[in-house]
Length: 157
Image (tube, rainbow, N blue to C red; front, side, top):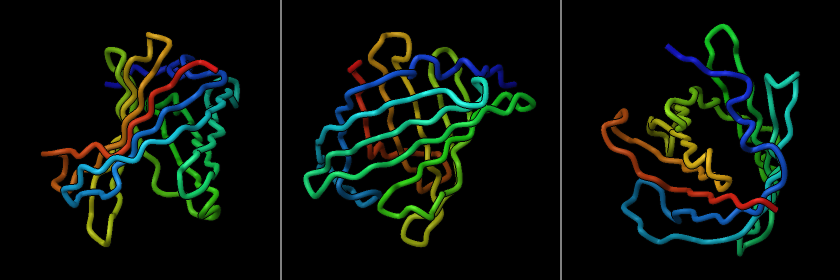
């Protein structure tokens, strides 16, 4: 049973500096991490039942922008999260769905990578510390194992 609330993402409201670590190869046994900086500015929408991040990602190959859009369903008490990347501005992937339990937010979706089915997991931790962390992981085996491929450490701007 989910016990989510429109206030679940209140910890993220405002402006942030973000330290990114992104795995260069996904589900190929890579241990080559790319590190880069960015910013994030989050605000609430729809009376708190939604929110949006405006992100700037400063990759060595070039800076780009992206949006994270979240909406809360009061009937299921779950959040849906979409990612919109300015490099492919007409594509919204299947949203990850989930919520928070004991201070950890876990959100999962079925997607594909290189034409094979995978699970995608977003996970929020350290949300009570003022320096939250976000991770993305992929599973090729329906959740039996997970490969973390992107980490973000947030610091108030």
